[in-house]
Length: 109
Image 1 (tube, rainbow, N blue to C red):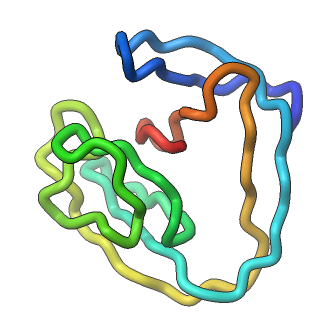
Image 2 (image 1 turned 60 degrees about the horizontal axis):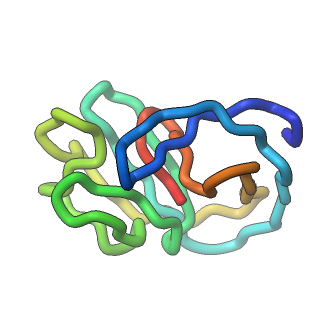
Image 3 (image 1 turned 30 degrees about the vertical axis):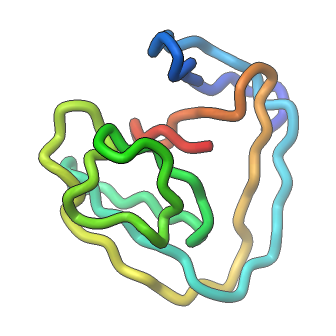
């Protein structure tokens, strides 16, 4: 929600900082999403065009991820990736400094 704090990262120097959410827009979505299982057993579900930072290939859209991509520092890669149909609300956030932020310890833009 606008006014909430979220962790951001400056990828030039890897500095992590708190930034404010300035805009949170809800969209109706009826189509494909990508479900990414990460090594801690949790799932990150994103639209197929969401940018995800990988430590081995830099910025990749979610639909182009593969199991060898390292999306958490020090991990051995993604456990599973699958496409799912989803009908419901998705959110797009904007931040006060850099629109690069963490979700489930994964860097998004």
